[in-house]
Length: 143
Image (cartoon, rainbow, N blue to C red; front, side):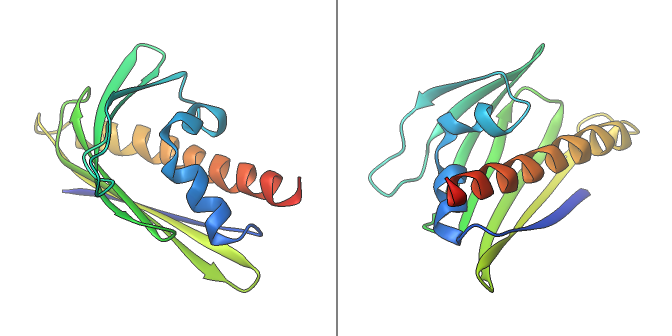
């Protein structure tokens, strides 16, 4: 099992950060992701949303499995990378006048010996996601 745990702070309030995080269609605006497609709308409980993101030649399909409004978004990988048990939990919590964002991901590589490659690439991508989220939230809080 591999693990990525990245945190950052933003001056934006948690509701600003969470609103961006919870809106899958906004992800291409603040991440390296090229496109977003809603494959399946969430149920009445807000869960089950299936989304597809394209970044270059890579297309991943994910499903939202937990939403705690204003605090946590959790998704699992359904397809697109040779990984198993991929789960990302993104927590937003108030800290002073701003927020702290924690993006915690765990996964196992399907092919033995390849996990380090995905760990390295996903750590870099996750850092870009966290930095982009904080930057966009700061922009929205000011603007």
